[in-house]
Figure 1 (tube, helix red, strand yellow):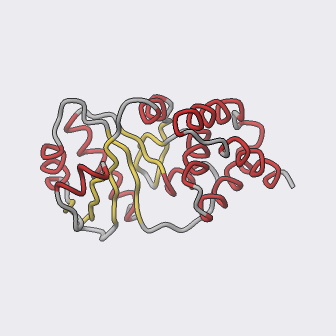
Figure 2: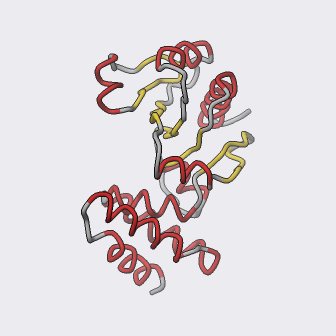
Length: 189
């Protein structure tokens, strides 16, 4: 019997395949794939709709067992997040509407991974580290250190640094690369 998360991912995969839409898993589920050990209660994915509408996406995900979770059209437009609940499992799924730029880059580098018997595209370890550094939350800091430690020399630190430098420039920040270096130091203690 598949886990609730595998059921949710299978339903999301079927939804996005029906739309022929590119997508990837990020967040805690991706961190788990790459070596972080953390409990999570939801699934985070990014999907690229192209010329399809949010209404078309909503119709398809509803046909695959999801329901909107307390959001209206204004919320979705303003946040670019479609919050869902999978009715069969009760698991929440946040579907981020991907746009051009860094999210497309993350999607192009996503790697297939088996999550409980369901193969799905998962953000690359380097991109998960970059995303979590950008978020700046304490629980993400723990994931960053765990991923760096678990991946060891297989992790492409140059790629993470390049991504963070792009983000620093785009967001007029100067703290992201320094945070990577602090996490690397902590992970190798």
